[in-house]
Length: 557
Figure 1 (cartoon, rainbow, N blue to C red):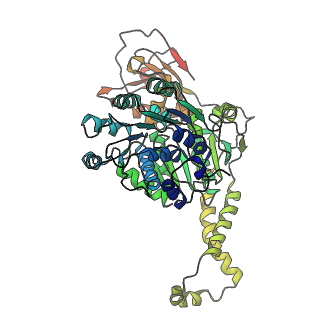
Figure 2 (cartoon, rainbow, N blue to C red):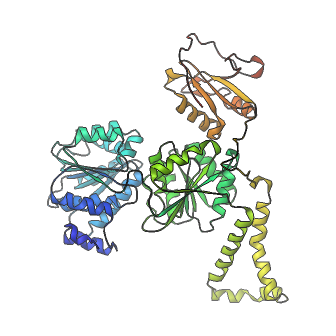
Figure 3 (cartoon, one colour):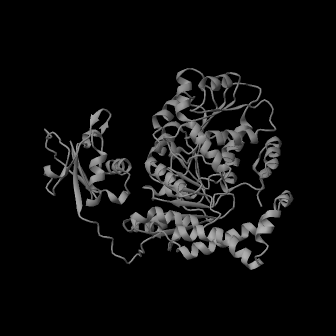
């Protein structure tokens, strides 16, 4: 079996690795570390989340640092504050036996002056988010003009988040002769362009098959009606009494809404999305790591950098648009050799995506039925009995048992067990007997559920406002608080656009846009007929006639 000592790592780093309990290197570490220690070179390493990438670049990077100099010699750029902090902490652990080596994290949400002071005292390694690093450069708080090494971690995600300009600008302040190590889960065109512009004949290292799922993860999907998505989430969570999960939603609005509903229904849940302040994010993550929050509802971007190894389930409340994101999401479970489960809550219209997903991740995704209440009750009761069995008796309680013994002495052992178990059973039974917890049965053979009569709307937003059918639909779903399938037939023209909902959503749509302004501009919505003619008697709103006649429609169902 390969061990770290065979990779060429120095004794001081080996000492730290052994103290951390690392037994043998992961595949990406085996492939990457010897190459980076053997010669100075640029590399492009493709590996999924949770494969040990930080040690893969961190150990050879630390081995190259000259501790006799306080100049900044290496820069690591990561997409989020959480990942930045995580990488910094890991590097500090690896460097614990190396005196005089200083690592400083640079990220938003903290005092830039304090970070500048730490850098000024001497920091051979900086770990930074793109935005804060740009700010530090602009204020001349850092000097990276003579660094010998730059690491781009999660490069694809940084570009997905819109950091291309920041990265390009940061790299323009670094010397041409430096080494550049790029780590990414995927290699889209934008990442390839960065590599081409700033790297010289990079060595390419690939771990596993592109987009392939981890062998430690079981993949399942559950077919439900769109209106039953939330109840399905609760059933899936209830069927796993020890669940410790991340639930992924597409939008910040859905993330907050689902988390709030879970909390109202008595679940230990929390939300993680971009609208939270840094302090709020820190509090949520602290509670999640301590397992005070058992269900973390998150957007894809906000979940970047979450370093929690014992997550039991990833639940896709909504499928992402990109397959690569599915792999990133699922990779949050099944880490550190543990087993995990990825559950997809799916509507009939999304079913065709499963075959594509299977082919691309090269893994089976098994169709399952949402658990019935009786099945959940059985699991929950067994779990409750197990908790009673495993509970340690506190001797201090004896002083308080006299009255309890008097009250309960007339009951037999079997009667006491029934009464004790009834505490939990009555709660669960009452909950699942509510009509609101019901879920319609749907199979792959069922015909799609017919929507009620459609309502067609005109909105004064168009392609001139940089909208296409996709991002307009995303905006409408998010703003109106609807499911993705509730908004359809989105047609974007030059000066305006059209979209449909079922007729029962009409009042909700019209009320939401009543006197609504976007960037100071009044956004107006009116009912139309199939030909696009306004229905004056159907709307409380007015709209000026468009001066330009649209010339092209981009339609997508």
